Image (cartoon, rainbow over all chains, first blue to last red):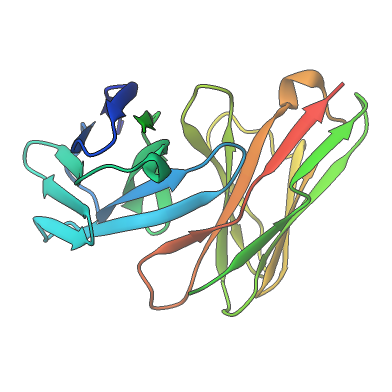
Length: 111
Length: 115
């Protein structure tokens, strides 16, 4: 059974620092892995999607890596801003469209 | 980008009543939509897969008679929580995948509170 774990559960950093969010999964048989941002009481915003054959994806200040063999993905956010405060979720696509989510990392970036 | 509209965004109801939540793909067709539930401080959990024109597929432990799913068209799926009870209070969110696309697009979610 696939299990997705995110560490840390919460993170508070001053503005300008880089953020490192970790995600691990137990079953390497995945189609892809996706990182989302969730704001309180709102839906999900897709940040990055990494196919199982890829090692990383980048978008602006965001970079996500994937090591399928070890069951790990890391999301890096460079030069954090207060607007980056949110909960970040990773999710593995275990079969077409069915995502298994981690519990999330709650990030607070203080001015 | 693709947009998925979900409403209502929040609903408060009395115990024993039924609540319907709608999920629409606005600018693409979605043969399959997914319904998730999130309790406070917990992960989003897949409840069911909604297939246009056929019965929904429910995940283990989800009561199909309680959570009725109807996927009447390629752009609309509904989730009805029947005879809601306080333990059904949760954040419900849908997702849809455009044909040929890899990303899933999520609705904005519905916060259900059952009194």
